[in-house]
Amino acid sequence: MKKPKVRELKEAITSLFSKPYTTKFPYQEHKPFPRFRGKPNFNQEKCVGCGGCFQVCPSKAIDMVDDIENKKRILIHNPDRCIFCGECERNCITKEGIKLTNQFDVSYLKDISEVQNKVEHNLIVCIACGEIIGTEKHIKFIYNKLGNLAFSQPNLITQLIKDLNITTEYEEKFVPPINRQDILKVICPKCRRISFIKDETKKTKR
Ligand code: SF4
Ligand code: SF4
Image (cartoon, rainbow, N blue to C red):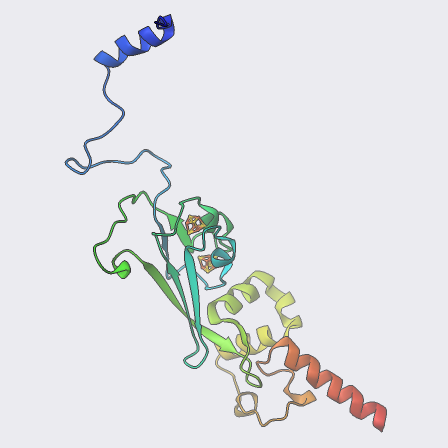
């Protein structure tokens, strides 16, 4: 028989007199250690709905549902798929849109919605083709970040004007097909390109 090493003997004797590492959960409340990585939670106030966390999640634990008809984006965190890696928090563009908590007990009985966590945002879509441009909050986040540079991008200008409540009837109105004068309306890059190309084609025909 192999004799135990001195170190192992020492560990065995010490453990007889020391507190166990395991806890008595669920019979007793368990307090996780500081910096424990538990269930991430969205913060409706701080999240801008950019979808960055959805993109980086390695286990596809975050769903992003875009309802173009009702112009809504919903982000849903599913703890049953989450590996609590913290990548969503680390890559969040606002740094506070999603945060890991110390919640470790994410069991549920019948309905997953008992433990899911969601945020909802208003979507901005292209008025010409219906393509998603982004969420209202994300666009605002970008123009706040860019400052004066935001005036170089038509959609940012339009949103800024809207937030200042100086939108005119002309800016809201769109009569297809898309034309050069529509470039300052809320349109996607593809439609903006079409409007430019049409304009250039007209010029060369002249
Ligand atoms: S902690 Fe990791 S696995 Fe869980 S939602 Fe965030 S990125 Fe995805
Ligand atoms: S702001 Fe943060 S939490 Fe919200 S969608 Fe973007 S990355 Fe996710």
